[in-house]
Image 1 (cartoon, rainbow, N blue to C red):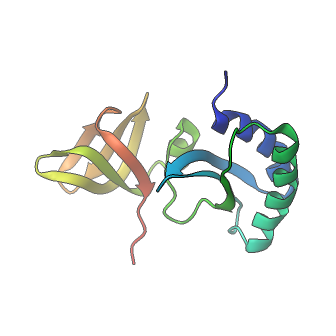
Image 2: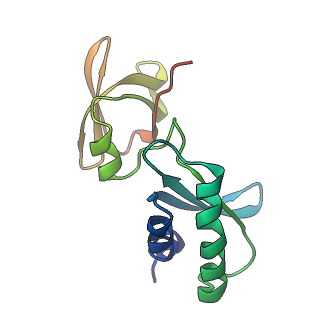
Length: 151
């Protein structure tokens, strides 16, 4: 049986493309006892509230019709954001050379967060260039990789 996020991604893709956007990610997660279905979209030049609405309305109708999720959930469509999470090979490929923040499950050399330049992505492992040189982080160590936004 397909994961909910994969099923929803298949339903969402044509709707998102019709709206002139790209599908970044789909999450189906439980937070504070409630289920959330989140569809993240992207668009050259940025995503507007109108883009989110152009995806949300028709996709909501499709979800009602296909009914891929048992029980109640909150449905959200939003931009992937400036500090977007990188999860898939195409995400990493697009942002090679960009500054990223990596959060680890356990401290490494006393740190659970590293910021550096994304140098490579190898089957889930991330190569990061920091002030101390290159660091290879394994998939098992990594809790989250996201674009780093300097304020």
